[in-house]
Length: 393
Image 1 (cartoon, one colour):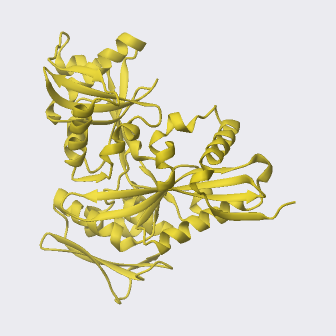
Image 2: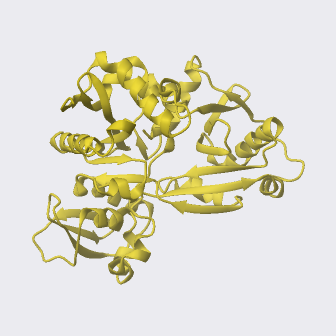
């Protein structure tokens, strides 16, 4: 039997890697065509922007882990580099050989060497907590029914808006969508050159709203689903009107009488408006995160939280065992929120998984007694970490 060899994929491995991951995922789930499902990652010209870690036996690929560049941007502030993990796959006859574990550690070692601030992925929780990933961040899912629209806008409501599908050649519309995205106070970086591929990945469809010739916003809908995974409008006050129009369209096409609409904790205006007419709302974790530099990730979200609301003043020292920076001090004074390294005695010690949930879990105020005991921490946590579905890998 050939001894396994580990390394990174080269451009000439493109076809073999695509064939391999499609085989493995199609064996485990429904048939997969990653070029169609994820053009933002698997167009040939994009392949080397990500890193594919491979395990081979001879010339045959036996396992793959993909790591893809990400960046969280703050308006007028820092950009935080990260990598999303995806396409974790092992050949059915090569399982239990430790290949996935080796490749995951290779990816994480490179992230630390390259000074990434965070990493994230989707998948079964316990499987990936061994590698430092845990559910974190916050997302809101609103359910909007036809009855909510009738009672909000009136039985005979009408609108001057029209909704149209967006195609790859609609340059002016895509430019307007990019402008709306870049106006967000916090966002994931999206290359304009790849915007259509990003927003049409995961079998999603892009729709734009117009009034006459004026662009009024857009939404992203997963094909065949009731999910609006992203919606942004030039005038957010028209949210109910826009959703009502799209729901009417879906009702005519598929007999659909309800939609779900996603929003993040960084979108206070959108959450406020949706809460005024939606039937219900539930919140949950945004994604699985591995924090590679706690200070770098916490600091801008801490300052952003201070911009969103008035925080109680106070100070708290957290020791993160085994993480760079040792002890971190959170302080709010005079409306300013700061985080700094300190040699002061800690108020609490946590391991990195616990610390990630302390800062970013939507239920941290309930599950962590230290937060429940201090008004300062209750006003501060959780921090508004988020992740938009169309940026998932």
